[in-house]
Image 1 (cartoon, rainbow, N blue to C red):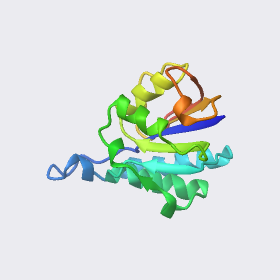
Image 2 (image 1 turned 180 degrees about the vertical axis):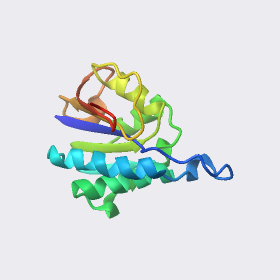
Image 3 (image 1 turned 45 degrees about the vertical axis):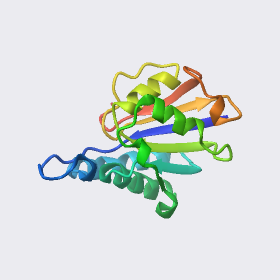
Length: 163
């Protein structure tokens, strides 16, 4: 069994028009919701073997904040530049090439790719992954490369404004 956790980065700032999209930081709301969502994971007993993040500032900052909350070493977070602005096919390739010794993986990245990936991999329909949302998809497979379309079960979908 494998669990893939998709985390869309927390809310980012658009205040500085001179910044490249890649360099946009989290805004105040993002800096508040990222630790809150990490605490929700920690309270649920969430464990992860590896965290892989887009290197975009808003994504890696979100990854570090959540890692701290769940007790995962920030130094062990891996960055994969292919996650930034990735198509669903690129994201599928990233998931398929994960090391099989890692059974619980968190990817931190961006829309629209993460919403599309969640819908492609799971048995559920997610209309949109809002900022700092978390989708956990469970697969009954022995290898990441065995994952196919709709082969996963969406076991949790949480977001900051969820009632």
